[in-house]
Each structure stands twice: as structure tokens, then as C-alpha cells.
Image: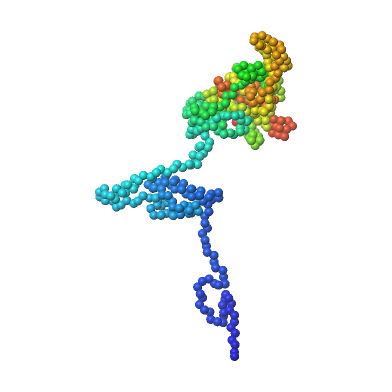
Length: 515
């Protein structure tokens, strides 16, 4: 028997010896089926849930409804809302505006007739169908307007006034300085009534330069930006001690609980009539020739100093060209003061105070990274009071005082001795008064600054006691000229000695203009 062998068939190419059958439809059995192309599904943005996406679709529908005068908003179905949550658009059903897919169009009116038939009446009723107004939308511009109130004098909408509670830390001079680069700590703003409307002429009539508006920021405020129904007026602290330049003591005021008590108050040097009336008039006239820039708390300023960033502790000359020419004579006269030996000012700040603007400055320290120990201020045009306060947790030891026939205080060395006491109009010598300890926070000292006087703060008065100028102590226009020296870091032997020398050379050229 003859056996015929058939060659094996290749699984892909098939058998060459045998006739090939007709190919069956479908993919080749030896190859992988091509993958089905799928449309990628859009996902919500990062940080946005499906619920937030659905809410966003509803807000867009309301916004479209407010823009289409002939459309009636139609609430999306649950299926459409689910598709919107997945990031897909809504399908447009019949009767929906093609330009605004989220709006339902009114029913089409019937064919017009010659008379006022039911078709025309139905069409008129459809066009005049009432619809409820959409809810108000909060736009980004509205949020920005409410986030940072701006003084209306600059041409913006009224905003809530700010209160001035507490004692911030900022960079300023002893006369309420506030030089360049104030490092003021931010706090919560108070709530109050709207800003009053003020005209440009009325603001310019406040004096001290041109231009309306104020420079208040954060919790700072003045009469130009405060409303008549302010929630809490700025604090007007009562001073319970008064500084005596002759003895260097702080004496308790008669109407306070510290009457008859005193304590040494070091770090203050005060001299009256530092310049003459003619010199004062000449200096103020030269100042008013330059522009006064709006500053915080109702003041205006002129800066002569380097560009400073106190927060990052960066310093450069910038556009600083030196102190003004009229200050050369003032600096020369300072050499006659015993506490100003070797004083070389590197910065000058002129501040203009007016009662019509509510000018003031809250209790503060001057920065001591850049400025040295001595702060010098020249008081011009009117008298004022420099209020000193202390936030320390320490206590102050008060000593009893007694008045002689001439009204003078006893010297410090005799304050601890036995003093005379009056009992029913009769004097006795057996009464001994011991010292009294009081918290530092309860003590405030008033330093009266006469017109044309020069005051120097140093030592404890510079580093332990804050200084302030309150509104009630500004009766007329006042100009404060504050001079500052460099700290040890920028002086000879310091790490920034070269930069300090460069700034001093520029400052003492006395050819500067306000920066």
C-alpha cells in the first residue's frame, strides 16, 4: 500500500502543496488584534471635586441668563449635571439657544393673523413671561475692592475706616519719624462707617504740600480716611508723669494716682531755642519749595536718605544725593551739644503735621539694625508733647517727693530720706515713706517740646521706651526734622564699614534733594 505524505502547513503562510482555501474574514490568526482607539476622558482640574465642577456649571448658567434678555434659564437634568461634573459639555436639546446652550428659549409664536387672534396673544404672552432675576455674582474685581480699602480722596469707592489700637513697632524718628522703609507689624483692621466725601480743594487746604489723599496703610488712619461713625477712635493715652529737664526726673502729675512720686528718667537731652525765629522761617520756606509726599497717619514727608529694606536688611544708595543745603548749619550747631559729640547724620526726614488731617504717630521704636543710638529731632512752628511708654514686664521703683517753698523737687539723693508729712494741717517728722513699685506698663511720661527746641533720645529712652505723638497734642502746623546716624555695623570697624563710608560721603555733601 502506497502512503502519501503531505508537507506540514505553516501556521501563517499556509500550505504550498495544497490549494489554498478562501481567506475567512477577520484578523490574521497569527497576529495580535489592533487596539481599539478610545477617546481620553477629561478629568476635573487638580484640586476640584465633581461637586465643585457641577456648581461651576450652575454658576455659568446663571451668568448666561443674566446676559440674555429673551431667554429663560432652564435647570439642567441630573444626567446633564453628572456629565458636567465629569468635565463634558451639556448637549443642546430642542428649544435651547444655540449661542447660549444653558438657556431655554420661549415657545415660538403661532402664525400671525390679520386680527389680534389667540396666536398673537400667545406669542406676546411668551415674550412677556416674567422670570426671576438671577442671584448676584461675585466678580474678582469686587473681591479686590473689598480686600483692600482705598482712600476715597484718590478717586475710589468708599471703604471701611481703620482703627489704631495697640503699640506697633515701626521705624520712625522721635518726633513721630516714619522714615523710609517702615517695618510696621500688620494687625487686624477695625470696622466702621464709610469714608466722608472730601473735595480736592479741602484736602489741599490742609496745608503742607500739593495733592489730595493720604498715605495710610494697614491699621493706620487719619481724618481724611476715617468716617464720622468710627467704631473705635485711635487711642489718646493720658500721660501720668511729666519729664523735668532741669532734674532729669519724671514727676507724677497732680491729677493722677502717682502725684507726689517721681523716678529718674535717663536718656533725654532737651535744649530750647536751638535756632532763631528768622532761621526757622528760612528753613520752612526752603522746605515748602519741594514737594511733600503723603505719609501714614495724616502726615506728609520729605526723605533725604539711602534706599532701605528693613525686612530683608538690605541697603543701597539708590537715588540718595545727600542732605539738603540748609541742614549744613544745623549739623554744625549740634557740635555744641555735649551728647552729640561725633554725631554724623546719614539720613534726614522732614515730617509735616496738621490738625486738619489728624496727624499723629502711634508708640514705636526706631530700627536699630541700621540707625545708631542717638536720635535727634528739631521741633518747628508749634509746640507739642512727646509721649513715652514702656511694654516691658519689669517694674519701676518710685520715690516720694516733697515740695519746698519755692516749688522745687528734692534732689535724687534725698528722695529716700525721711520726709515731712502733713496730718490735719500739722507737720510731723516721724513719717517715713518707702519706695513704691509699679508695673512699667502703667507708666507714661510726657516730654514737652517747645517751639524751635532740639531733643535727643539715647540709652534707655531709645531702646526701652517707645515714643509717640498723639492728635490732641497737634494744635497747629508742626514740622519735625529728624536726623539719624549709622549703627556700629556700618561704622568704623563694622562689617559694613565701606558701605557706611560711602553713604556718609554722600550725606555730608549737603547737595541733596528729596528722594
